[in-house]
Image 1 (cartoon, rainbow over the protein chains, first blue to last red):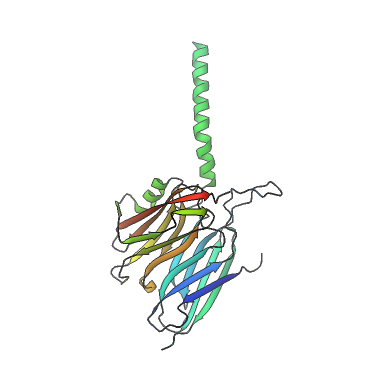
Image 2 (image 1 turned 120 degrees about the vertical axis):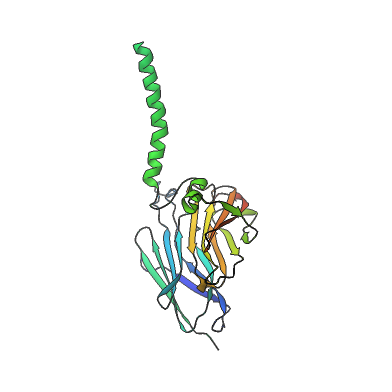
Length: 111
Length: 155
């Protein structure tokens, strides 16, 4: 499948140490439920969904999520996060077919 | 007598097969972990029988009418100080009438600063979206909202 497209957005763009920011993580994923039929072949598309998302800062996980197929296609996860200082925010996501991917973004607080 | 007992046996077997087979199929398809197909059983598995209180502290935002069930934005916010002593431990999101009622379990820590989750869910039909909150004190709070779906998002 190759690497999936994913994106981490932080709002607001400029922030200081100790500020609470919004972190959105978007990923392109089919999130198949295992109930849909392929219109061309008539075969049931097997379930394929993200089942674990872990947000960590400098290697320390601060938010873990367990997810199921009831989430939409190309899901978005938005949470708040207090900026502790300089470092790297990493999101690791796994799916039920054994795919493991990660995306990271550098955190550079100003002031 | 023989005919009667035979028929009774047949009826029982038929009843048993109709009851047993779907549940067996469900059990085979069920993912591992505390996952259940009914909302009550799912809530029971998480709370372990503790009372769930509908609380005004939990704000669940979802559209009243969703034109497309495949993408329904849901935002859950909880009034909580998020300190080491008192924070929101977990947010569980349920779609009460989907074939798998569980959408997401989010485990938060005090590092989050604010207890909030925004995501997008799939809804098969018009139903209640429910949020179950677990606090660090062991309390369970909930909030739910009905969403009317014009086009289902499953299948």
